[in-house]
Amino acid sequence: MADLTIVLGNKNYSSWSLRAWLALRATGLDFDEVLVPLDQPDTRAHLLQHSGAGRVPVLHHGDLTVWDSLAICEYLAELVPSAGLWPSAAAARAVARSVVAEMHAGFVALRARMPMNCRVDRGGVGSSPDVERDIGRIVDIWRSTRARFGEGGPFLFGGFTIADAFYAPVISRFVTYGVRPQDHAAVSYMDTIWQMPWVVEWVEAAKAEPWILPVEEV
Image 1: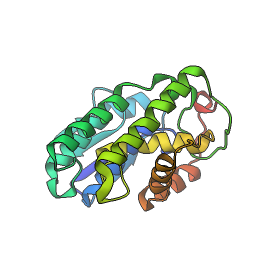
Image 2 (image 1 turned 120 degrees about the vertical axis):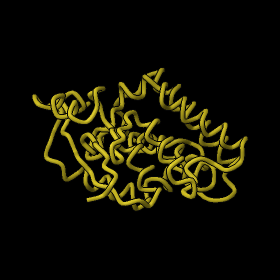
Image 3 (image 1 turned 45 degrees about the horizontal axis):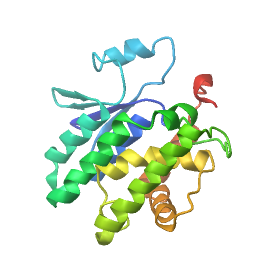
């Protein structure tokens, strides 16, 4: 049994779980998974066994409990500095934290109208003026960070960071809802994330899940 355990929601629907899980994979540490199916009669009772917040994800490390996806990622970055979960240069790190915070708190229209769902094709569904503005802003973030900080590799800041973990569920949404930006850098970045072995592993597990949550099936 590993010293680290991550508590996740349904892999098909839980974008916040994916973010923390990707950061954990990037550390290279061994860990156990506990999956709590969402929107079931006993969901909240099970979640409250792991955190008073009653939400996923949750990270247990020994007797320490960390909840909230960003807090988990920050903890992992400090736990394994060699994983490079934040860029090493101060300017890049400041921008990375900014784009992560924007993702953590923003893009409400995109979240509401294009919920994460890895196993369906909903091309053309969910668009609205507010969603299009969110998409435009996301593409601008990808383009500008790749142009300024991406020389060292195919990710937003060269190597894989928390920023990539936070935007991976957006790419899942873009694939599901048929969003293909008219920007070469953005499309190349999307393809990089979507072809990552960790992301492929997550999506395959999501597609194999038996649960269907009607509220998430746009």
